[in-house]
Amino acid sequence: MTSLTLTHHNLPGVTVIVVSGELDITNDTQLPAFLARVRRRPADQVVLDLTELTFMDSFGLRAVLICHADALARGGDARPAAPQHGPVQVLAVTGVDAHLTVHDTVKQALLVAMAAAESAI
Image (tube, rainbow, N blue to C red; front, side, top):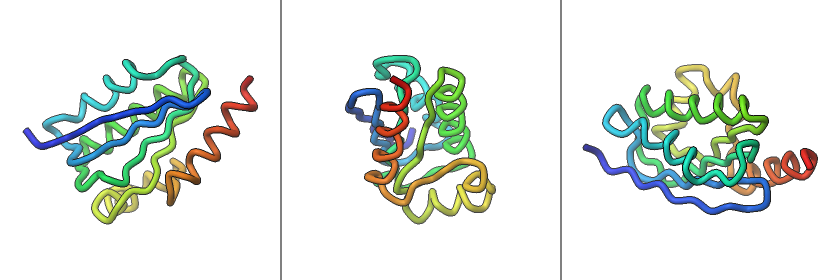
């Protein structure tokens, strides 16, 4: 099994998940399950901090998309942020980045998520 570390912190109306290591076929179910456990409210905005994600295959991409779909279904949104070289390529080659807003920085994603959380109140 490849190494994946998931940590989180909660802000008002926003759940931030830091994804570190490799997200692939051996551990892809961990990310959606982790989100379900750590989200304070179902409608929370979600920021997926991908700064420390070193590898992502198509199953890892599927996990990100499941988190996004789940957040949308509950009235929130999931915003991938700061992906590095390998994961950026997966997002671009698959065309997902044309349909899902991928933020260049975690700060950008947080600003958008915080504004969305504020307007939902």
